[in-house]
Length: 221
Image 1 (cartoon, rainbow, N blue to C red):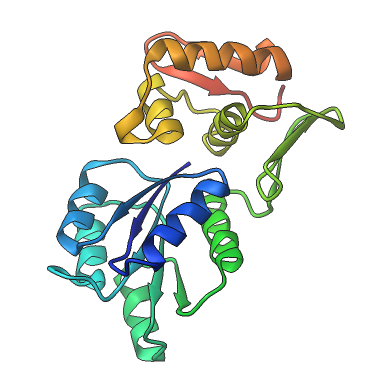
Image 2 (image 1 turned 180 degrees about the horizontal axis):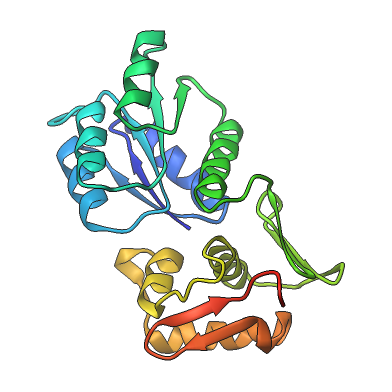
């Protein structure tokens, strides 16, 4: 999963990035509103964590520009200002959730995961795909009730495909969401990762759609 963190505080921003990375996300930091608007408008993200008090372009304006351009990734607003009218403004501008500073990193991660799941149509932290289960909270998976031994990259791949269930995901998209824009790897690396994951969950569960990408099959598997 790929997250954009928009925060100009030199302590908070890097802390949020580290917390997201520890939770299995690929996280990138933008410190200015204009940079955040450009990144969110030109790159593909699964979630944005957006501060409101930003230099060059305020957070609400960034959010409004994203939504005006049909950028529909979930947005969690962070703000030191706890006024209820500001919360209403944020939600009306297109935010999905609001977290007032100071906050606990654990709560922020829980909210981020919930927003990503909701966007994919999942209500619970445990994603059930036939006999395959993906626990997004514990970052673990099982097959027929038996725990799977997955590397961090293998779990992140499975987790992303589970959130894109029954959709063929191009190798380039997988690379961006697993490695980030600056270290996206290549098609061969993704193919090898797919091969390793197939060995562990069953080759028949991940279908290769020539010219389109890789598809994790739904309940019928």
